[in-house]
Image (cartoon, rainbow, N blue to C red; front, side, top):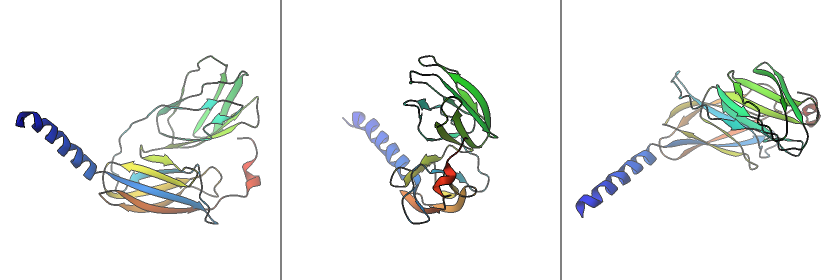
Amino acid sequence: MNALLRPITLAALALASSAAGAAAIAVQVTDSSGKPLADVVVSAVPEGNAPVPQTMKAAEIEQRGLKFLPLVSVIQTGSKISFPNFDRVKHHIYSFSPAKKFDQKLYSGVAAAPQVFDKAGTVVLGCNIHDGMVAYIRVVDTPFFARTDAAGAARIELPAAGKYTLSSWHFNMAGAAAEQSVAVKADGATAAGVKLALKPPAADAGAP
């Protein structure tokens, strides 16, 4: 019986050890008036030039109902994004952004080759056929990132405790991404509050 219990006990100890070493940043983002801000990309980079892993998980942005879904995406540098078209009409997506310039025709029901995003920065998507379609891709040099929900909250899972530079970006914020240093504790989540100033709503209109 002891022989049967031993592997289970060792597995339980390993799991407990892994959980004990877990760390995270619980981010809460508001605008300048204190209202929760959704669709904010938050990312964390270890301070001291510590290396970060290259996960490069593939992502997907759909065309559905003459919209890009989701509106905001975040990926690590070097990752691929596919753009399936679920509408019955054609789309012709493009970006003139310095971080990624491309032009791609999308046909309903036909798979198109994914695009590789190998430069950090912001990519704004548009459609040559439907001017009202717009989406934003934030490409970051770290696998530690998240996007805030409707309550302005996000959680970034981290491999270990330590000091991290937390960056926060919104597609309609004034200026560059906001940065702050966060000392992350070893157990549980370290809270970090962020307040961003946004541009007037009218400034959000226009072609990408």
